[in-house]
Image (cartoon, rainbow, N blue to C red):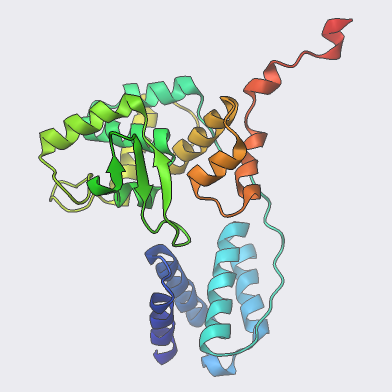
Amino acid sequence: MEQLKKLDTELKIRGFSKNTLSSYMFHNKKFLGFIKKDINETDEDDIKCYLAYLTSDRNLSNSSVALAKAAITFFYNEILHKNIKIKSSKIPKTVPVVLTKDEVRALIGNTSNKKHRLIIKLLYSSGLRLSECVNLKIEDMDLKEKVGWVRSGKGKKDRIFILSENLIKDIEDYIQEKKIEKGNIFLGWNNKTISKRTIQKLIGLAAEKAKIKKNVHVHTLRHSYATHLLESGTDIRYIQELLGHADLSTTQIYTKVSKEDLKKIKSPLDNL
């Protein structure tokens, strides 16, 4: 379809990430398959009908429906040049799943593969997103200064991340053992960039071995990183920078799960 080709081109020209491009194309193809009529004969009501279908029939989460809406309205407004404005229901910010420090230790301790253990330690110690870990290159790290850089991260912004002192030797040993001089640090069995699926699976397996009952994903380590920094007294504005959040309100969700300081507060009854 000509319009979808234009959408693909426009997304690439504007520098959207691969994930966003893939999501926008996916949702618009699904939408067109749902309405089963010429795109030029559709209107705002067709979009609302599709979004209602995703909510009631498919039981998709609010965030998934919001992504579908964003993808379709972009298509209509930017490619078809129709002025579409659809009000969205406010998406509630759910409290993220966070591991305790003991659970993080168990996760690492139950991972025997050196590369897999290094990946888990890096994700937790630096707060990297899955795609950022996959695309991390040796030249993006300064081991002497104990820092690294995420190149063109989410929102097309570079940002700095910290490297744990306890991780430096592990990284040096790994690079030396694998004889990696440049390029991606984590490779798969075929010497190509490690897949996202591989990292997701190794974390799930480690959580299973550690007998962690929580729903543990790659992002759980990022949530834990942010929460533990907050609990140790790190200013939330620094955490915002380290996570690459454009809006402080996104970072503030971690104040809801940081319980250590609250535990130190005595009830007035204790002082009677």
